[in-house]
Length: 155
Image (tube, rainbow, N blue to C red):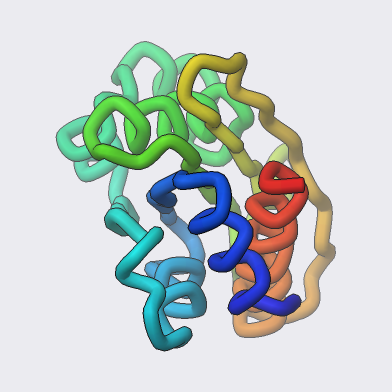
């Protein structure tokens, strides 16, 4: 992923970016801010590892968490929407998943849900089953997928 090109596109479009991360713990915003000059387009990163943080920092509703669990497209949508609502960014990506080890029959290791919000448009979500690759590999794959989603949104 050419992160510098992604940031250049965001700058060309005049869009600020925010991230809302759970299982990646800030890896996406770190990848963005590793590039010199990223402050021109990276507005902020929310690291909301706990459910309480998701509710307090992003406005994720407890009813959504109770009904669907933290690893769900519904929570990913509310995380992305919250990042837009609570920042000056026009583009936000969210990530919530099970990096491992572990998981369950219903929510296996390697399941990661993503949200992509662009101010003024409907937020899109998706779930990717990376599989039981191991914690580090799942987190890196989720980071790379989120960066790819941002790049796709920028055209």
